[in-house]
Length: 219
Image 1 (tube, rainbow, N blue to C red):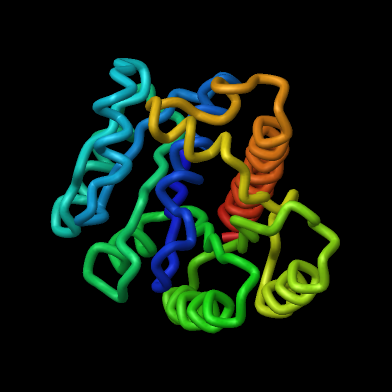
Image 2: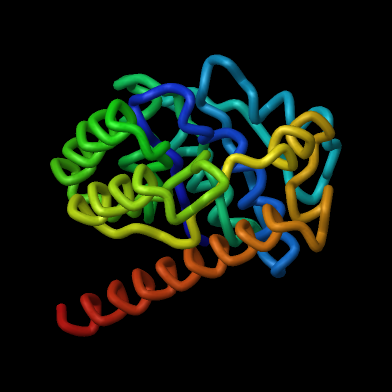
């Protein structure tokens, strides 16, 4: 079982929407997914209530109970846990960072988001946690200078998963219906982006697993 936490101290980066869409894409690819909502706004939990999918539970978990909850899930059939966190430097965000195998840092291609992402990255480096950036809510023209500058800035701070996630209506429509973008328009551009993003995330998790096995053999 692998644990992925979406973290960023800046609000409005689209963590909850991205968590939901990645979870659906992962489920479609054969993963057994469990979602944990640690954000006081409970956006992901509300999405789960609307979805009513017994095969993809969504539960709110407090920071003090996260470690025990993940340990319990690891004893079951779950293969992927996705954790949504508050947009603050908080005990919940800290607990999620510590528990995760990989932390995703969604960031819009704006200077304020990139500054906030740098602070989040600094915390993760202090905790010696693996992380990757996702450029989210990009303008439709992906080759714009703003997106290029944003990509260069976050790549300078660490790994950047691709593709970039473009601001599209499908994401909001899917969230409203308790769906993922791969369901609301299976052949749409948003669906294609998220499927490719899940593939990139899965490859990153696989590399981590191989690195851990190598470290254990060396020990």
